Length: 155
Image 1 (spheres, helix red, strand yellow):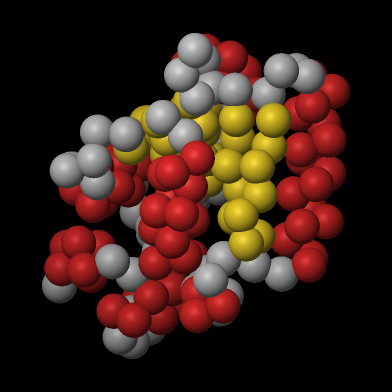
Image 2: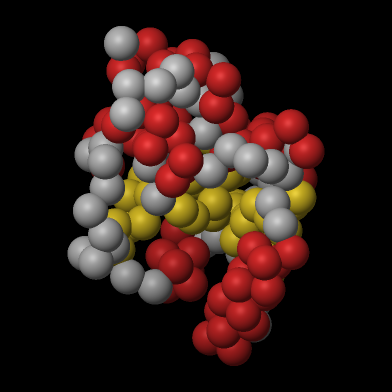
């Protein structure tokens, strides 16, 4: 059985922090599905199609990474695609507390799906999509925080 992992999030936009987590998780799994969660309660800055295009372009030479959108419970989407693992990146202790609560709920819903936490590289700790969106909205230079594929598409 292959080790399929879902890396869920909004990726609005995908940052170097996200790329760091994906790259470091690749040796652990046979396939990583970057799952862009569609949440009716959120209004993203970038379309789901744009975010998918970024991820697919960044990983065009690595068939172990794909990007898809989904709605509803993450655990149900894992079941749908055969993912036995959920990947989450942790930057701060507060991230862990929040993510652990979600992991505990997911484990209650399906004991066969494990959540794997990777801590971000220190150089990416301050890289958050919220901050990057603010920099972009206000005409700042977001290049140090995002992949060249993302930056080039914004120019």
